[in-house]
Length: 347
Image 1 (tube, one colour):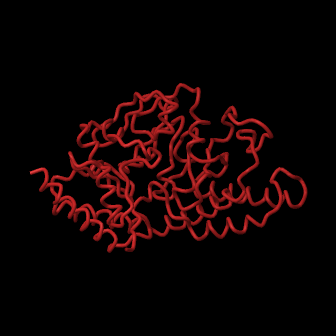
Image 2 (cartoon, one colour):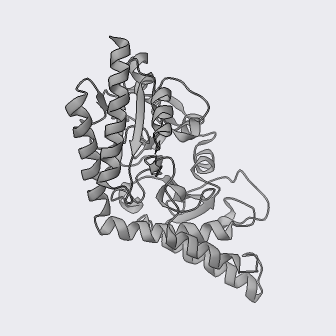
Image 3 (cartoon, rainbow, N blue to C red):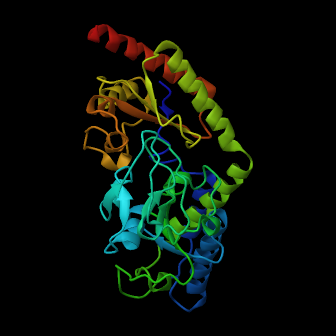
């Protein structure tokens, strides 16, 4: 059975460019903090990757601080600041904010005090893209980076969270991007690496992969690759809607990421659908991958006003540039087969 991967929002397959950069970095001997030739070579690679990430993210002139991922970036940016957020934010952000910002049925968040607020640029479960107010304290750009046009320098925010593995880089490396001159107290202290914001010897191999992946992702975005992905997402939704008219497509009245379909059938458990599709050869999810092992109604959908039965019956199908129309139609066919069985049992 040929498996079909439809969980790109959880993690994207490693890009060939990232793999090649990482393999080359493995041959570098030096520590980037060392002043000898070997250390300078490693330092040069880190700075090249920093420039690649900054260019791809529209953050030239900003500070790109490499970290272990967007979760660490959220902690560094948000801890102890008394920031406000919404309950649709990723768990890594909700852990540090007062989740009081109102959420509309279409997934849009109302921000009254931008300078005190955190807002995701796009939701990982629904794909809903937010309108970012100027002066925002922190933007979680993890899902938009590489999928839709975004420029940090034009967003008008103070800090941004990004992660490599969402755009085809390696897992375990991300960055906090800061407006130049932003004051920030390090949480991990020691040798003062990363401009004093995050001590510890740099993950040179991961950073090299991040830089190469960011550069390749920007090239794909400019080439319109994700426009084709959006067409496939629309084919998927129209195919399902034609045979299962009671299916709820969450967030489809608002701008969304081009690859994301969040659909719900009240009463049909999302976890059941994920297992059924897995056995049929399709990788999908019932929410954020970072909530694995904690099966429950989607907090995101409940914040949007959906009842528990709907929030428990939601799945996320997220496509990527390697997804084909055959993949999409095969998934729809298999999902509809199980849908008919569910309806027959519920009758």
